[in-house]
Length: 212
Image (cartoon, rainbow, N blue to C red; front, side, top):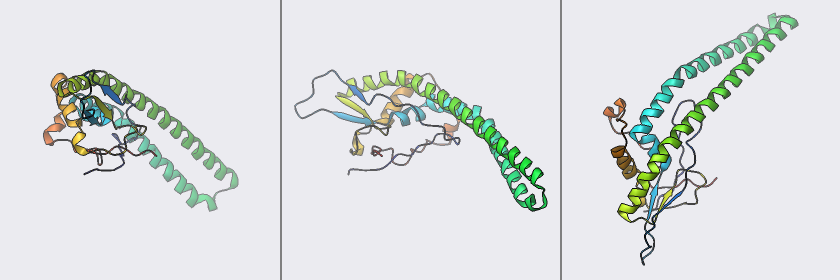
């Protein structure tokens, strides 16, 4: 049965961007069979984020930025309290004091937004570096899978720009890629893995994201 769906993925609470776009095609040099090319489908972003090395590095990244996220939430809460306080006390304040408090709140809000944007950019850059680093090694594993199984092409459906709209779930080899990569990767499985296998994101097994 053909499956259609839209992928929505967010690795961390800060929602700071997705992993980078990767080449959508890995080719096998063997001649295509007379019956047509043998094709497989993989979600590279999912493979990177669910392999042992990816989990370990992304978990470490999340822990690194967790204190900053907590600090942002506290500052935002304090800012909202100041706004509510000003709204409540405004009728009792003189114009000068009211304007002074309003400007102070506005300045705090701008500073908070600027600091958040800077942190988001730093976070996204580090996550991109993790994805690129793992992909350099994972692409070699994909090439081995293509040769071993005789795939003529492997399509990556993890990006919004990919041209694949519909495909059969039996073509998906993301889990096979993760298993093969884990076998070659020195990274141990994260401790949290003992609680059970990670649940795949909705819509990631058997469907490509639709173009907006």
